[in-house]
Amino acid sequence: MTATTIQQQQQNIVAGDWEHLEQVFKDAGIAKSELKELSAAIETDGDQKLTEDGSVVKWIKATAPKVLVGGVKMGAEVGKEVLSEMLMRYYGLK
Image (cartoon, rainbow, N blue to C red):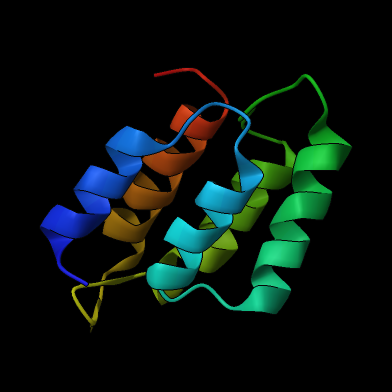
């Protein structure tokens, strides 16, 4: 998967569409167990979307170094940006 493909998928994420978000994350190299952790974090955070001390932000920080773009592992900072962008679209914040 290329960076362009991930960007296109990010643009197509519909707010609240877990299945699509899950597929985009799988394509970015996120393991199924980590996706289960994210699902639980989203449920735990409820209406508090992407707050600095929230479960989802903690998940982003822990998972960011594992993100793949175009088959290449990204650094933690780039991974955080990619995951945050996708989740902002999922939450309807972008």
